[in-house]
Amino acid sequence: MPTFSTVAVAATAAFLCLSAAAQAGCTVPTNASAMQQELLSNLNAERQARGLPALALSAKLDKAAQGHACDNARRKSISHTSSDGGTLKTRLRKAGYAFRTAAENTGRGFASGTRAVQWWMNSPKHKDNILLRKAREVGVGIAVSPAPDNKLHWIIVVGASK
Image (cartoon, rainbow, N blue to C red; front, side, top):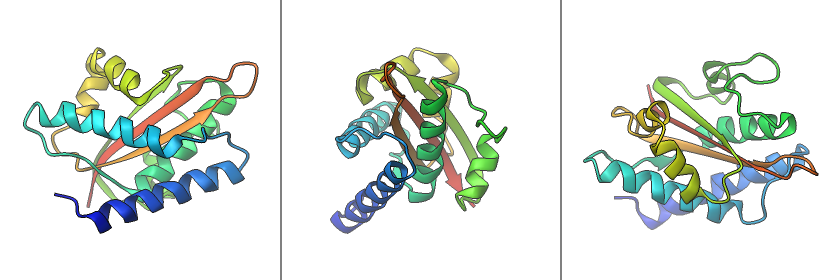
């Protein structure tokens, strides 16, 4: 069970990741930390309902997810391929995350983390990613596409480090 200090460190890491995204010209919702926590709560509820362990926030996975959310938002895309041709594996390497297993979900237009998880759970491939048995950590990226689109872009990256 996470301790207060573990949660505080994860929340601080998430805030720093979101702050860096904002400085890089990416629009991040002002309540992104609360949105991230809502999404994480829903992910873990789905996992725990099936006897799977809860996912802990990972600063490195957050970095990979947030960078890709910003990239997708700029392009108004839900692609798993970055604008520079990078893949999930490439993004994880750049974030310094050595992994045994990893998977990614992307989404666009969901008004809340709850809605994103509901949609993903109704899509077999996305559901498989959320319920990935070996996953122990998650990163969450949230960004807003430029006006007049102004859609929320959601990325989760689940994984298990080496």
